[in-house]
Image (cartoon, rainbow, N blue to C red; front, side, top):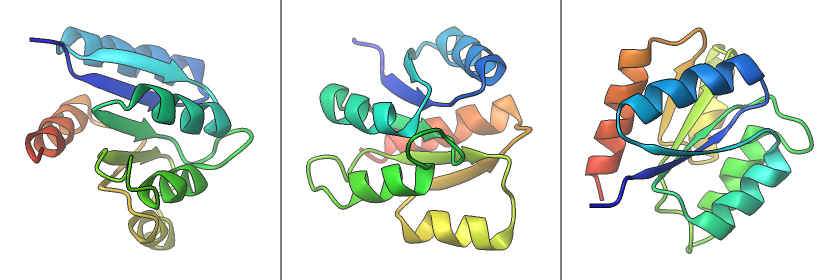
Length: 124
C-alpha cells in the first residue's frame, strides 16, 4: 500500500524538521513548502491526502490558501489542519469560516497532531 502523503506548509525550519520527523516516523510521506503561494501550487499539483497549513506565511497567508482550496471542488475534499501559534477565538473562528477541518495551536502535542491526522484521513 502506498504511504499517505501529507503536505506541510510551514515557514519555520525547526518546525518543518520536527513535524516531518514525527510524520515520517509514523509512516507518512511528507512534502514540505515554506510559503503560501508555493503551498497552494503544490496542493494543486500533488493532491495530497492531507494538508498541515501554517497561518502566518510569506506571500499568501494560510486563511487564503485554505479558502482557495476549499472553494475548488477538485481539492475541497482534502482535509486541512490549520497549524499556528495564533490561538485567539477569532483566529479559530476564521479558520472554520475558510473551511479548515481542524485547528491545532503551537507549541503542539505531537500525539494530538497524529491523532487528528488519523481521524481526518479515516473520513475518506
